[in-house]
Length: 420
Image 1 (cartoon, helix red, strand yellow):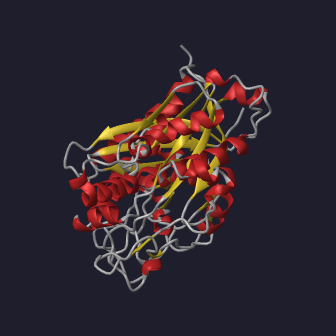
Image 2 (spheres, rainbow, N blue to C red):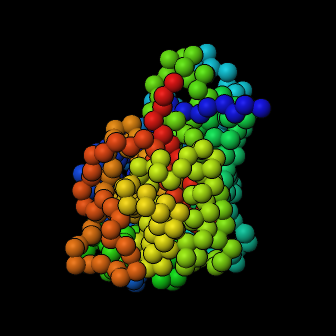
């Protein structure tokens, strides 16, 4: 059977850099950081006291106040990103065949704030017997965001959630891609969301020594590929890509941002939290995506790397790129937008895929910020173009996005310029 072509026709985003795709993209190109001291709780006794929070978002601009109270923050962000994406794609919901429209969203953790609040309340009152909010479970569970999105629009197509830690939303996009090209849906609202800047979230990652503790300089803390990197910066947010079968998009006169041409998955099978030191899984997943797309390494002009600003992860990903791309590695641009957004965990892949789509559309690469010339790691090859500190204009025929998650989960997607 001939696989159908899949294009991107809508975008949505709520990030530490902006509350829609336009604001986020503009801030990326300007090299702005979303990091600042945490405002959600008292960090006095925390080693890491800063994060990349979503700022100045009025949830009630999108969700009724009464309804919003029933949703964990991660679901609120997911729903807002989806509302933006559906609006952006311009589909006439009155005429659409909603049986052929689905939702696939990713999340790494889910309703951790709801869990904290309910267990805290239970601990205080357990002598009186178990007392829980009836919305505890439906607010907390990881699959609920995709359910709320489908309910909001009445979409009856495939509907589920992918959970693979920080690879979650890339897996969601890849899964949605496969459903459409196999003919099981005409359009899928895909993406991911996360809201884990909580006491348990920050405390748990700090206990693992995963977070940066550069508390005196938060905006410069996320510094992928620099020798002084000391861990990732926690972020929150959501991203949405409306994926659509090409002929369906053309028939309704949809604008097309880019074409999604390949996806891949692999496992490190090495360690629960650490990347394979030689980049084995990263190499495999990029090769899988290239094979799926029918592309060669020299066809890629931009890699939006996982690049979390951790000592081991950054090195292993660079090794994988050099191994797989060979001489072509020195002709493409590499950047980590996590240097600006922080690590959005389960939402990272969706926002970074959006960055790839906009790079392909606009022929410009967002930077990796916070690098200093004298801050070089001897294990990293600086002959590669990491797009340090300033966006770079260039032709972007195709862009590849990497995401890797705890458990050794690796996912990759490739976008290219749309052409008839």
